[in-house]
Amino acid sequence: MTGSPSPRLARGGKSIYGAPLGILMLEARFPRIPGDMGNATTWPFPVLYRVVRGASPERVVLEGAPGLLPDFITAARDLVDLGAEAITTNCGFLSLFQAELAAAVRVPVATSSLMQVPWVQATLPPGKRVGVITVSRTTLTPRHLAAAGVPADIPVEGTETGREFFRVLIKAEKQDMDVALAEQDILEAGQRLLTRHPEVGAIVLECTNMPPYAAALQAALELPVYDIYTLISWFHGGLRPRQF
Image (tube, rainbow, N blue to C red):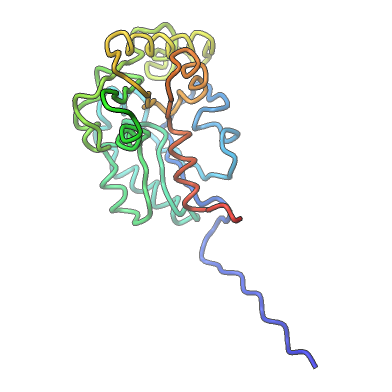
């Protein structure tokens, strides 16, 4: 005689299942090509998105996100209520909100790819440093860096002088983007960074729109390149460890 089969219990409590990572998005209309954080095909796992209304790239990147913290907290809480078990954002400049968001939602939060800088620095040989490529060097302040655990004297190069990337993503001069020109802006920023700081031994890309160009940059500079994709791949790996 066999006993009764053990009951199979499905746990509830969420609105959406199978997507443990929530992404807070800026409000923008530029194209998000594969590799961009805001393109859902970038991720090999499901994600939840929430657009924070009024959080334009210009307001966040150039103006320091004044008055937007409550809106980001509300959106993050909405994502957690839907089922997110961790929160990230699609702008490295939101490192300013790292501590406040983590305290407000009480789940793991990773606001910026810049958080990788200390880890990458630990991998480099003596005499080598991490360099950062950002969408806007002039407005990436010591406050942004400190909030992500980044030394204030880190070598930084921006894309403000480029022909396409900055003016489409930040200045919103048009909705279409010449991808080849945008890539050239990133490559030129990388070359300027190495010319000014030959001690750079690895690159961290601040901007979450830069991963589509990471492979080309790595090939051009022959240095390791890290970005929001590498950070979130690690982040998600802890939420859903691979079963062996």
